[in-house]
Length: 254
Image (cartoon, helix red, strand yellow):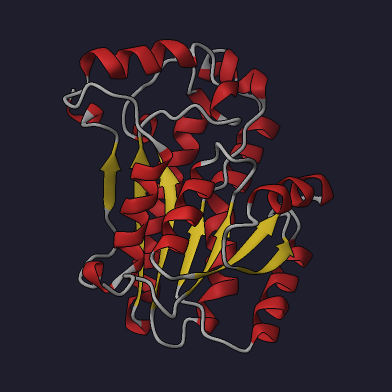
């Protein structure tokens, strides 16, 4: 049976290590036939990525620190040099100061608030602007969110507010890019034990709660998120845009 993404090229931002949700998405995309373009933050991250993606069809690694406008402009030039359409963009980037995750939200300072929103929400807008011109056959843009965008989750704080801004950005991008046949959606994943998630205080409590109280009684796995991302990148989701797709063992119901 042909792969759902045969002949497609996908840009994936946010692989930090083999436990990253973005890495699980990359593996799912590769299984379904996609070629991969991966972005990285710095040389240390590039080395880590190179050490774990040898089995994947990676055609290019591109530096892209989304806090720097010049690197986003350079991303556009790198993609132009590929000389092929881009079919999907996976945005799996988020950051907030650890102290802003560990103290009450009311104590968030201006710099911490702006940093969380710049990296976690605005970067989707900037990357979409950079990649959309190469989606000449239409395409799919997706980002990663969490339930803390719509409900108060203890110790998520400023990141929950940034994720709410991210989800609102998805809706406006879906409207802007829809005439170009570009779909924009969000995957709201359950708590996954990634490097970035470990910055959230009492992560283990959240994971245990998922095991005990979610309808499926198990913690979300990166491969589950990866398979949902395949659906969003494929023609099977051609009628969907501006949606939030929950992949959290049903925890959002509880």
